[in-house]
Image 1 (tube, rainbow, N blue to C red):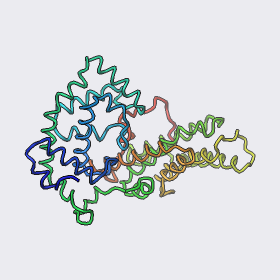
Image 2 (spheres, one colour):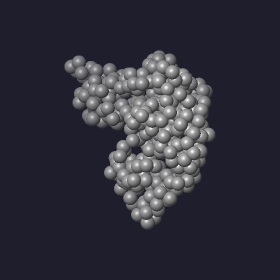
Image 3 (cartoon, helix red, strand yellow):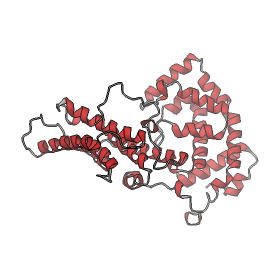
Image 4 (cartoon, rainbow, N blue to C red):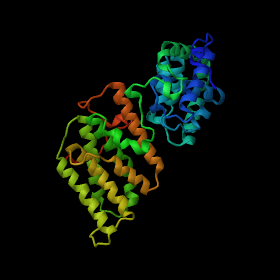
Length: 359
């Protein structure tokens, strides 16, 4: 049982303050918290104090060897170190992630550890050593951050019924798989478009397995539709012939369903007809959402695709994308007029060198 909040915040010892508040936050949010669901101040203290303990005991090798649910690219963790204002620790963290090509964190723990180990060896262990040297000043900086933001922790130790109501922007759906559909409608216009285009983009790699013998033009048409939706979001306005762009995925989805129903078609049948039809529908729905033909967007369809393909990991990635875009909307106060490029989801994104048809 953590100490009362007043006792914690009145501690003169910096380490006692950090440890006490960390314990109180864990008691409130649990040890499986999703960073995007928390107020920024709570998230900052939890991530900094937790990660400094892990790295202090096991080095970055041990830290990077474990997955971080809710923060797969460590974006929230890095933002937390920047927020605390301890430049020696923040700089050490930045140098670690510079070890990954293009600042893109590998999804496999083994690859992360290997790349880090190579970079750390090249500087004779300085990546671990510099962070460890910064720990005393990091503790002092985090304690100062806590004291400067004490109001953000008000009511932390109260029963749920007695806690001050959080501001609307701090509330998150408890079950992302059930509520993203509704919450996505609350995003600004082009953030919605960008998210639904991202959903279609995330499931598109399943196309080749779903319909391996499909005519080559089918794949190009679907990707071009996704690219066009991304382009509209990035421009913050409709571009190209959206009606024509949406018609082609609809035709492909109909062809896949025809094969599923056993009707003769000119094309080789899909290996997974329903999946192929849904992937095409997701690309088309990203366009239809822009034109107002479909208020739902691509998320519901992509959720069905991940269920049909047994790809819970892909659905988690899509939920992470949603939490990312919503947090960016809040942090930067984006409006219905704000254009949203694909880099909002993937900072390492670069446009394809291939020339895409603009419908």
